[in-house]
Image (cartoon, rainbow, N blue to C red; front, side, top):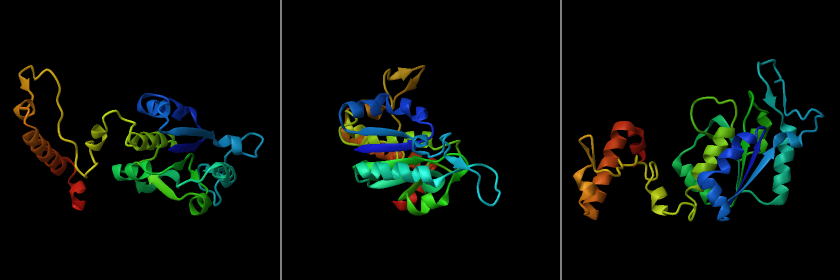
Length: 226
């Protein structure tokens, strides 16, 4: 899989993609990243990629020309399954979205910035708009890094124990059950006996019950689709 990220602040993403699981995924040849500084595609002598909005609204807007140039250049190199724009008013990013994107070969992520982007970019150049929540960040760089992490970790072979990713929260619209490790008792706080029993079927049933109980209590909205 290849993920190309277009941004005005590539340094905000470099650390995330060159550490931990994302780094190992690249070393295994399972994913390839491309970071592209949008300013490199600007025709402005000062490498500007923003301008004042028509109509006099406050703030600066990302201009369409460098974005169009960057996307056109990347598309001249390979075909892309999705061109994603990170924006607070996009579709909510979920584990289901991560699973869908992990099956693709090549995607582009365009990081939003400033007041927003010339709307013609959204009308003609991107295929999907994604948000991580109903709040506004300075830019979409952190969002792009989060999307990349969530997508790459579910690619087969990235995590040594693939069952670990499959049992994460949200994979089946349930929150994950409680997990414990040694010592079995600490300050008189004991691990549930069922987990120490070695009885796989009973343990599995306990985990499902706990996952359902936690979901009902903390995120009942997830159960609407079940």
